[in-house]
Image 1: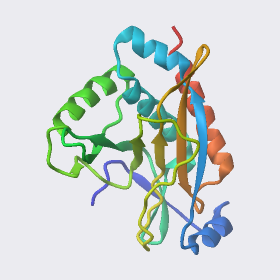
Image 2 (image 1 turned 45 degrees about the vertical axis):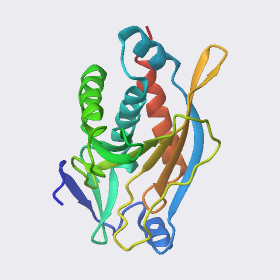
Image 3 (image 1 turned 45 degrees about the horizontal axis):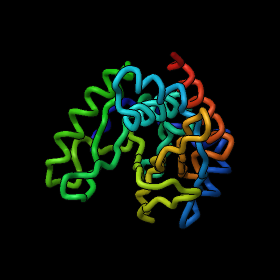
Length: 216
C-alpha cells in the first residue's frame, strides 16, 4: 500500500539506536506498554464551551503530540527503518450493530476542523458493514477507546509476524473526574526497537503542551 506521507530511510549503520534496534528486533514480542493518565482539564472545558467532541479532541491532541515526537514517526519496512514526515490516525468506531470498524481520520490544522470532519466520518461509519473504512497505511497511529470503564492496564492485540511495522497502539478508558480535574486513562504500546520509555516521556510532555493551549 502506498503511503500518504513522504518518508526517509534511516541508515542503520552509525544510527544512535543501531545496537538497540538490532537487539529488540530479535524479540518475538518487542512491544512494551505503559499505562498512565493525562490531565485533560483545559481541553475538556474548551470542548464543553465550544460544543466539540471530547473523544475526538483527545485523539487530536494525541496525534499532534505524536507528530512532534520523532520516535513515534519511525516504522520498520522491509527490514529498514523509515521516518514518516506526517501521521494520521486509525481508530475503532462502534457501529450501530455494536461491532467495531477501523476508521481513518486525517490530520487537520485546527481542532475544530478535525472534530467537524471526524463527527461526519463517525456518523457514516456507524451505518457501514465494513471492518476497515478509509486509508490504512503505516503512517498512522492505532487507537481505541473503552468509554464504559476506567482501567489501570491494557494489552493491545497485535500479530506476531515478520511484517510488524511498529505502529504505536494507544488506548483510552472512561474519563475520571477528580475534584477539579478531568483525567484520561491511557495505555500506550511502542515497538522497543524504535523507542524507549524516555521517548514515551517526551510524547507525554508534548501532549501536555498541546492540551495547555486550550485554556479558556
